[in-house]
Picture: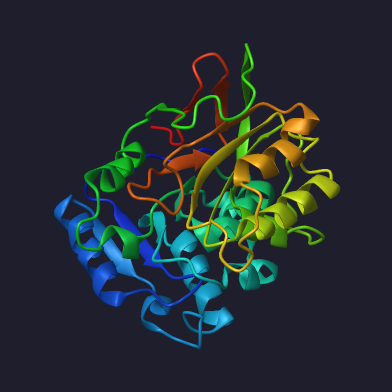
Length: 306
C-alpha cells in the first residue's frame, strides 16, 4: 500500500463531489477555514452541479476526480459530501493513472465505494474522514476539524472502546491492514469487480438510519459471501439512528453481531467515534491497525509519509 505525502502549508487541495450535491454554503465555509489554515483550495465543477440526487453527470464527476489526481499542484482530494452516486463512477475511473499519481483522498459514507476501489485497484492508502459540508456546519466539534492534523504530520491514532465488554474479550492483540467503511456500501460491492477484499484484514463497519433487521441482512450477506471468516477482526464504528422503526419487535445490534460475527470466533471491538457521529474522527484506511483485547482499544499506523 502506498501512503500519500503529507500536506504542507501553501499546498493546494481540491474539493470534489463524487456523490450527491452538497450544501454549498457549508462547503464554502470549510473552504475559508482551509484557506485560513494556510492551504489553497480549488472547487470541482460537480460541487455546484445537480442532476436529481447526483452532483451532476457521471462523466463530469469522474472528470473532477481525474482532474484532481492529474493536477501536480493538487496534493489532497477532499470530498464535499456523500449521499449516493460514487459507485456509478467505478467502471470509468483510470485506476492506473491514480496509482501513478498518489495523493491524499478524504471522505466517508457513500465514498466507501471509492475507498475500497482505490485501495484495491490503485494500492492507495485513503482516509475515512468528515466531509467538507459537515465541517462547514455551525457548531462543528473542534475534534472533527482537529482530525485533519493527521494530514500534516504522521500521527498514530488510538481510541479506547466506549462499549467495552459488549462482546467477548480476547487476551491478545491482532494487527492487520484495515478496510471497510459504510456497511450498506460495502455490501453493494459484493459480486462486482470492486468487491471488498477482507482476507487477512480487519474489517471496519458503520452506518446510519438502517433498522436492525437491515443491519442483520447486510451482515448476513457478508457472512454468506465468506467475507467475515476471511477477516482477522471486526471494528464497529458509530451506528447512528439505527434503532427499530418499522419493525418494533427487534434484535439489538449486539445480538446481531453475536449471531453472525462472534459465533465465528472473530475478535470484535465496538464503540468508536468514527462515522455518522459528532464528533466524527478521521482515520486512515489500508494501514496496519492493532486491536488490543486486554485494553479494549485500537491503534492506527500513520496514513501519510513525509
